[in-house]
Structures are given as structure tokens and as C-alpha cells.
Image 1: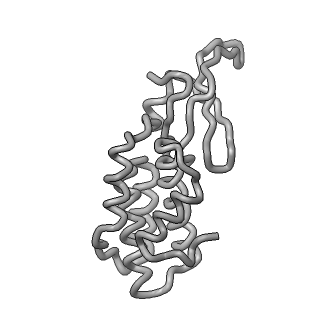
Image 2: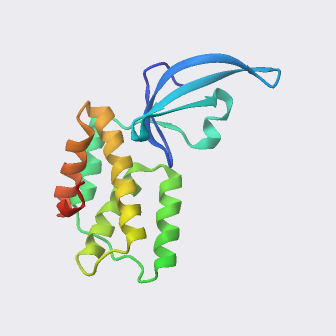
Length: 164
């Protein structure tokens, strides 16, 4: 399914790449594992090859699709629910889906919400976590610096004050 060097996206963990493919014996059972390195938190993870599909790990988008993602981010926002519980559920489901286009729309929509009122600390954290995931994938695919991609995303939604 994947080869060494392939750029991947793992929901919740974000973008990374296949560092290696190794056979390991664990609990007396020999299996092949992907060794993945993730951009965010500089973390390595070992996952059995046979369990990749169930975990929604996918190939990264193409450079052309990166432009589509950035266009979604700068498009007109859709009004979110006024209830935090509904918004939180929507955000969580979207993050778990690993759909970068859906994540881009959430960036756009939270930014639209921010224009009408301040964000809670929880919502601001979710917003930045999603920005990090989207920026990470675009950064690896386009071979650009992560912070410059984050800055570009935040510029598109006029939320530069969220830059660290």
C-alpha cells in the first residue's frame, strides 16, 4: 500500500511519511510494520501494515489539491451551530475523518465565527490543532516550511493574532 518515503496523513496525528518498513516479532508473532514519522511533535509510530485501512491512514494530497484546500480556507464561511456541544461533535468527527477538505472548511468556519465573537480556549485550541494538521500536510507535500504555511493559512482567514 505505501512505500518508504511516501507522505501520509493519519487522522488525529496529522501528516508524516513512511520512514521504514520492518518485520518485528511481538508477543511471538512476526508482522510487517510501517515505521511512520510525523511532522507535528516529531513523533515516530509503528503500525502493523494489515491495520492501516481501519485506521484511515491515507496518502497525502497532491500539490494541485493543496491549492484547492487553500481556496476553501479563503472562501465564505458557513454559519456554525450556536451550541458548543454540536460544534465540538462536528470538529471531532471531522478530525477523525482525516478529510483535509473538511478540515479546511472548519478552519474557514471557525474564523467566520471568530469575526462575530471571541473563541473559548477550547475552541481556539481545536482551531490551532486543525491549522497545524492542514499546514503539516501542505508543508510536506509542497516542501515548504511549516511555519510559513501556517502563517499563510492564518492570513487567508485574517487571524494573524493566532500566530505563536
